[in-house]
Image 1: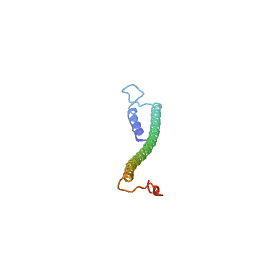
Image 2: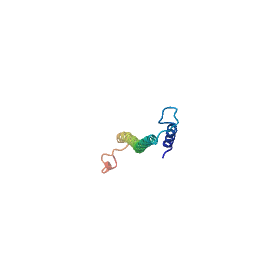
Image 3: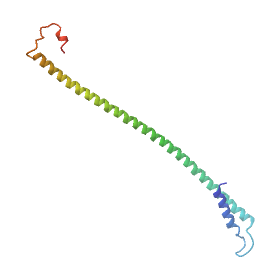
Image 4: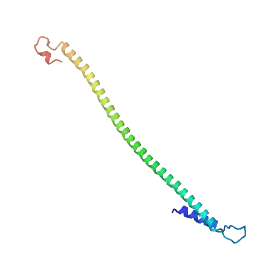
Length: 139
């Protein structure tokens, strides 16, 4: 029996002990039936409190389990967010690499065309239009 129930029984016993069935000032003690009735009520109160305690304990256990489940869910969501951030960073790096490559190819293509134009139109260089197979070496 829990300590609070024992304390409650002791307190009730102290209150009941001086109680009497006779008028005030009479030395007669309460009858056995009255004491039995009071102890029975105390026992019922103790059982009711025990039921409330067990119900509350069950609810707290259920709430603790729910919180654990919610905590695990939040942890998993945090991991998903972390993976999403990593994937976004990889996509940014890939996009930057693609943009740099495209810019370099555009720049290189423009320079190559300008170079070929200058080479083919340079007055000091011989003309290549009449040489068979030269187109294979040109662009």
